[in-house]
Length: 430
Image (tube, rainbow, N blue to C red):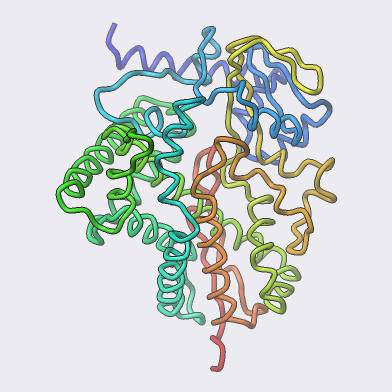
């Protein structure tokens, strides 16, 4: 039997099973079929944890999601205990090349995770962040200055995409002429890689993007070893703690994953966050009149947008959750971050977008516990910087208008916009 035939049969079975599970109301079938994760989360609030016929668990409860994310008894890498779990959790395969997902810090747990995090943490100190801040301000200012507020622009192409792309490439030390490649690699790995491929074509696209990105990073790493620069790749290559160093495979994978974590999620925060502002003109006006609210705007946007819609964890032992749910070793739970960030037990009127919400920072958009996103502060910095520059140059927010339909990208794990035409109006002082 050919591998292509096997792959086609696998994906066809997955689609058929999803339809059946959705039809009978199974939470995994409904999750996999949902186009609105926040709405799906609202339908499962009857109890903290739901069990699927597949063996998987599902929760949109803030307490359960936080509890699982911060517990050392849950791993990031799943086990496929049966045919159904293989369909929904994917197949983990070893590769001779570094894998942006399997070999990076995101897929490590326990002592291995602590070891890698300790080695890369110096690259994300407050001092380093301050140097990144000046870069972000310059890039954001240049981008905002380049647009014509009275003409229609695509917010994604003109602002939301180029800022985090320029930042992550500058941080990694990627030459300017190679940055378009990163856009394509990042998009493919985020949309297909995090969601799991749903066809043989997507599987091929994912493999090509992963191979090309890691090959590129391996070449760039070799250059940095010969000629170190003031960039993250050089820092990772020389990182050392108690005589321990990162392997080349760990450096390549971690740098590659940072492209996804540091680029795609921020693009989506900026694009969908701006869409939410346009849909709530009173809140936009409040921020324009009170710029000191911008940091809280970022937190509320993270809560409402939740760029990463859901994640999964697998138990390393038999245990019991705080709601009484018994979990067996090797069982996986899908954590609906979008739902947790709109849990009415934590956030009053949770579907309302409020830039002055007092506990907006309690969102878990960047995860929680040991696997809290190491680049979270960078994403916050970029969002604050861009919205600050836009409000400074275009303070008459009554003129901020959508100029067409906002089109969402495909994908469930990562939620973002493909395009959003808009106008800003006349600039300040004109």
